[in-house]
Image 1 (tube, rainbow, N blue to C red):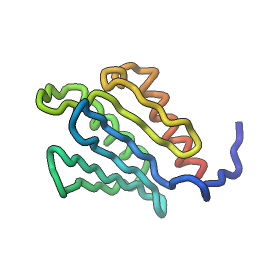
Image 2: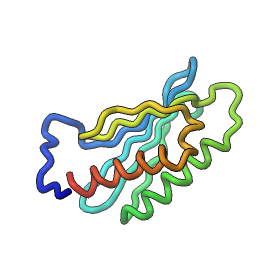
Image 3: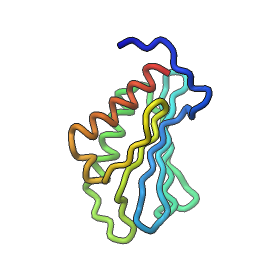
Length: 124
């Protein structure tokens, strides 16, 4: 399948990941691309109120490495106070998806997630 044009005028130019807790405020990871560089901004109002972590990656491989480590770290976390229970990803051009955090360890779920991100950035 070849995509020659994607109209993004009516949708966001960001990939958004909502990390949902049962009772606490959601954290968010925002991902975007400018000038062939990838940017991320992670905001967790529970653990670091008023602060954020921001990274810049020179290519999609480094972004993918970051996402791999990000989710690997989350699935190993034993946070008791305000654990993340669900991940919602909003990727322009795709439906919004909500999955249980433990399901991100499933190869098919994680592969679908990363392939959607790669498709979006390769064709926007």
